[in-house]
Length: 265
Image 1 (cartoon, rainbow, N blue to C red):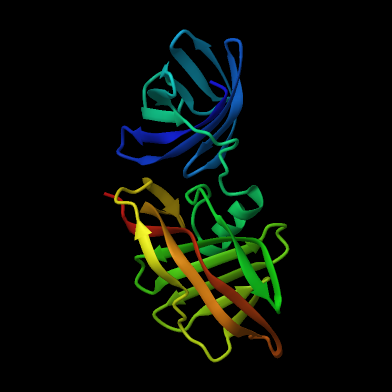
Image 2 (cartoon, helix red, strand yellow):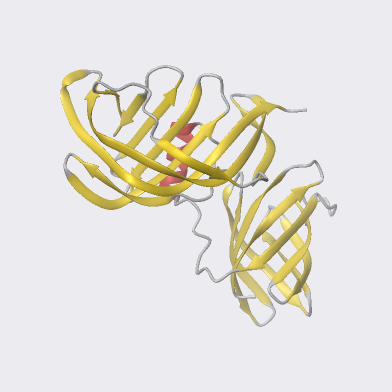
């Protein structure tokens, strides 16, 4: 079973999400890493394979059991150690060398800047951006569309080494920019539509009730692609209008997500 396996889970409560497992098999023993949408990196796993039967899980965490048939495996999982099934899972072996989920130095910032719980956004793109005239292809990027009343789109970028973060929110009023920890605005531009030509999968990759600001909120997430671009524009620091810099993103296709919030039923 050595390799990267991707798939999904469906809880008995109706919740759904993606999972990814990096497995190493040594005789009948399994080790590796587990990623669960809504949690991100869930921990190191151990397990066993006996014939077609497989079990694996995280210490003091979710446990999976089921059967493996060639490049597919499926079964049930127990997330509260009561020996009762809490849902089903299914995974398929891929050609990947790693799960490639959001890097740890990005995940926390996505939560801080976008307010999205860790692990819900599973992948980001690497793009080219022009910062103060310097072009480089070492920026992580992800764009989000929302169904919130005052917020329509959000673009998050971070240098791969974590040194600079750029975040723009486009809503029903002016665009708001956070650049490298400083609040700012676009010089002479408002509500720039940086995301176009979006296309989303029909079924959500995540559908669950979770706590946001101490209240339960249902979150549905759809995965897709879209084009982003920003014409060269001046960023103005709101605390020091003389502190400006230019920023530009040539048009390119990236991973995008649509996030829908609603009341838990």
